[in-house]
Amino acid sequence: MSNIGKLFERIEIRQASYSQDGYGAVSVTYNSLGEVWCEVTDNGSNEIDSNDKKTYVDPMYFKIRKNNFADFPTTNVVVYQGNVYDVIGVKATGIRLKEYWEIYAALKQ
Image (cartoon, rainbow, N blue to C red; front, side):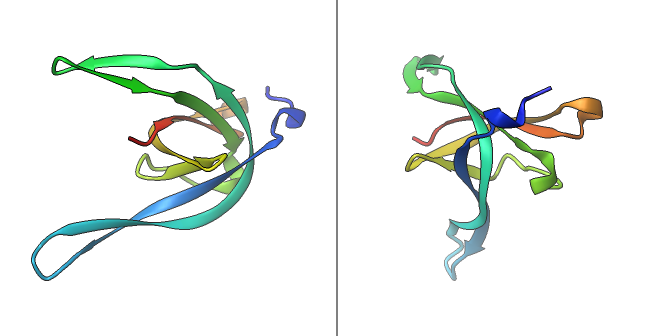
């Protein structure tokens, strides 16, 4: 069980909103869902090798109280210390999976 004292960082959660112009081009904008307290774990830099191209990512784990959001889609983004992170994965944790969202995210490229 996570100690409430570990939730001392602030992050902003933004939700993706998609629109299409008259030519069929899709654009995305992000609307703020609010700021929440969280626990942040920095996993250091990683290298991903895909299609013979090396990509460096800065993965982070953010743990927030689940009562802030009923669900947490991976289309959301996290803003932390002025940096925007794409959500890669989310899992429910805590007693009976009801207490926290653990969010795995990487620095937006």
